[in-house]
Length: 232
Image (cartoon, rainbow, N blue to C red; front, side, top):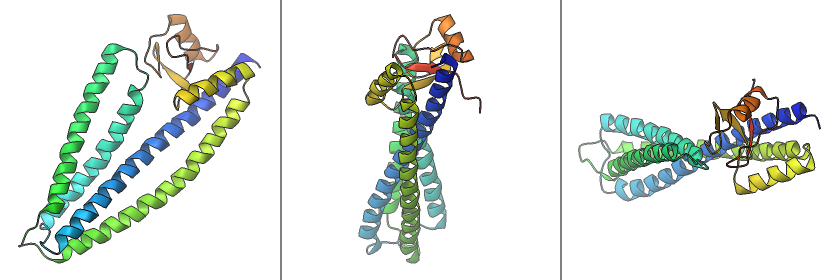
């Protein structure tokens, strides 16, 4: 197979792996949110017969907090995905510090949200707990419906990945298969002079070859194929 054709196949495979990684990160965020909803419902069910919910301004703060929880979970998932395979010590330590900070922020937000749901305010109106339950049920139904579609999309992407791998020469397809057994990424982008998978520095010529898409490049550190960024 001509090298240019093979490189283009690998670049397309990288696109599909990017899609798969993003999709799985979002599914992970939805899964965590469903767990928070389930826990919130349990707390709310226990509290609804004993106390009233907070007033409207507290409810508004809760909605903002839930949005921040979702955003923080999404950012944390992306950081954890990046840290896999990083070999550069400084980059690894920097990512770990960012992850630790996000985990601390997420813990603080979730604790505040659970405390909010567990508190009872005798001055608040009695209808708010029932309204909160309805809102959570609607959100849960939407999350589950969205995730069912995402599961079908994930299966399609995996099928496309298998198809693309099957189009490569046996030596390449065998290597791709071994890489994918170790993780989700077998083909990564070149990032300046670094491998987009492990973060290891590439020799100048290899980085240039990968960026130009004119030669087949494998990272000396993690053995992943390294390709240019998508043209689309």
